[in-house]
Image (cartoon, rainbow, N blue to C red; front, side, top):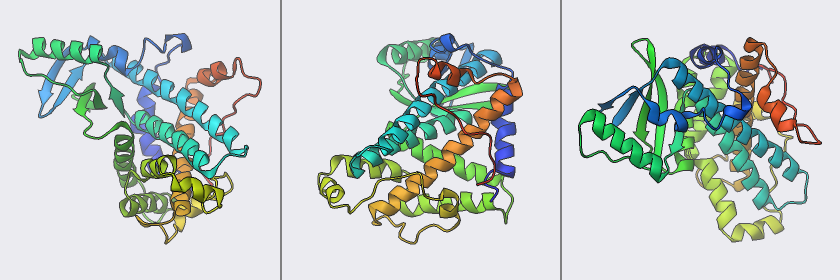
Length: 318
């Protein structure tokens, strides 16, 4: 089945291609990311309850690329940890929680590859930013939250950064915004294609059991003690790499309800993770392919590792 088709190509054109003229050295990532460029804006304006920050395009897009690469590192390491844990005699509880963080960081990476992401502002940065906005806008009542959400948008032929209150906690906002992104991607897909069917079923599942179901699943098995008993009695199973995730989204389980089994929800999270992972991997592979360069992030991750992490090749069909 062709999983990544017209919609994938549209995402590549909209979000990946603008980043391909830029690159960041591995040892410069601490200085080049959204948080570090936030205070260096040229101008700012209020837009309803949001703030629009203007930068030189090069500075903003390199900051975004730095954010992508930081989350790529975190996602790769978490995925590797999940695969290692899967081979051990772990309880199903911890197996699901480990896979959850693999899923969460790839979801966060996916958002950033599509020019958006959650951001936590430490008090020092938040207060400094508030004072700068007050000075520029000549307003006294500027209060930012610690948890914010940014989007990088095109306005009058230049990119601007929109900063909004996230309204939800870190985990919930990532899954809610990812569901919105999946809906956006679906609008670019052709009807009567596998790609459209898979996207439509992901949206339907999120609608039935809630867009934040991966986080709720993690909370259940991690914090409710009775699930430890279920793990011992083998009433919940470990997530493994054996299921056909593409087929899962072509024919999703009827047991996917709010009160459905832990197994059915974990199968959905696993399949969702694999869709997100492979989408991100394809975009990152294409970024380095267009640049004609070796994957510098992967090279540095593997530098001091005996067992190297290997990325799958670019793949559109499953």
